[in-house]
Figure 1 (cartoon, rainbow over the protein chains, first blue to last red):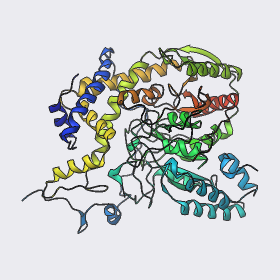
Figure 2: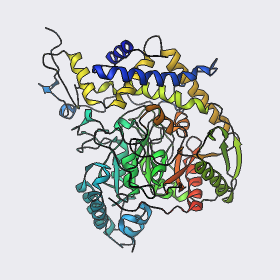
Figure 3: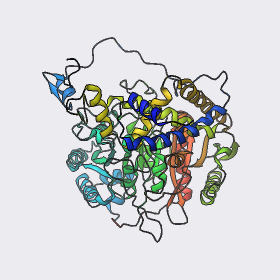
Figure 4: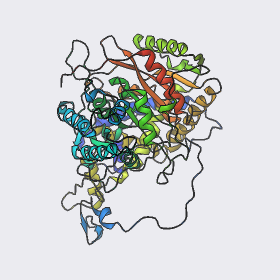
Length: 95
Length: 491
């Protein structure tokens, strides 16, 4: 699998990471090498094999449906880059 | 008398109870050692006050004869564990200045057992790396040097601050985390012991997530007994982690005998790679003889899908990382970079571009790619099917053996900068990744030295929840190997 520059830019946008022009070509080469290497998985016959969903077979625990936490607005906001009026603040999203 | 910093954790416990020294003296000796070793760059934050407060509490309790199990033991904590009121960065600039309002379950358990914290240990950024060269806060330097050389060596990764600190006698024990080998490989590189328990033994709550289906916390210490003591304090069911296992936590340290009569040890033939380093191969053979001498029977086993473990891992782990790391967006915590006049999306992209290092970006982008429309089944679903087959290989092996013996890493520690190609770096985890994919307990024990005098480890892999067998086989190797080498102090 060869990954071209346009694909790298598209995937980086999906991942919400802006890339400098100089970063694209090396990343395309690295991704091509890594994806070329993982493609050997295609050799494995997995007909009838279920994809793993849980590595340890455990039964999920039930708990009472009641509120056990909360009332910690100050703690939640303590590390916010910008908090105003008890909310997280972000750049304007509508005009 | 042995220097306080040379004591094992068990030795500290005994000395404190015998009043040979006080917990405050013990803490101060370690605080001084940490301060004198800053050239290793093992600690990102030093917390002497935390260690001294725990020591004062321990001294008071010891005077009353009511000391907790880890009373006054000073530990290092990997920076992946959220620690209340102490900066927690996961080695990344995107979390610089992040001061958690809560304590991870594992550190809370250690502190509740009486331990103190010397500081937060450097690591590969978001635990992505095998050499501690991806931290945003500089490389950790191994205390070890090859014979006749001053070149800085890597301490392994991602728990490289932990391995360097324990090997350099800055602390007797440290927490690590292991996603594909991040406890075992650094332990092997620095001549210490480390165990990744069964997936679900230690709570992941409050541990910065990398690949949630693989991440496990575990202890790193200078010997097997100390690992057993720390693991017991770290383990246990936690309702705050939905994958936590509700199983009794045995007294692993008390069960160590080194007697392997009746134990069947499997040697997986696929781990004998073409072109394997002859020193590693010879050490592995010696390990087989040591286990036989301890009473074990040895059988060759086959794990036929071994060669597919690394490629499967490098799909699954980045896929989970791309999802887990979506939370770093400049809104709720961590770095924010907002271009003037830019939109919310511009802020996300600029924040993540500035905050993540190159290896983290590479893995997020790979993960996003393999999960994207049109590629999901070919990459991600196929990798998860292969993961099922890898786990089945181990399940089949357990029909004929109780533990497996393998090398921990394909080489001794390498020099900083020597593995610039990402793929070459990934291959370092060839022996540790398969058991991670299967969720199995596995440990590395120091077993010998390379031709240039650098530590080498052997790995024991066990059945689910059978840490007892892993630790006991590790103990047998430790006793037979008689590993006493330690790095000569240059820092």
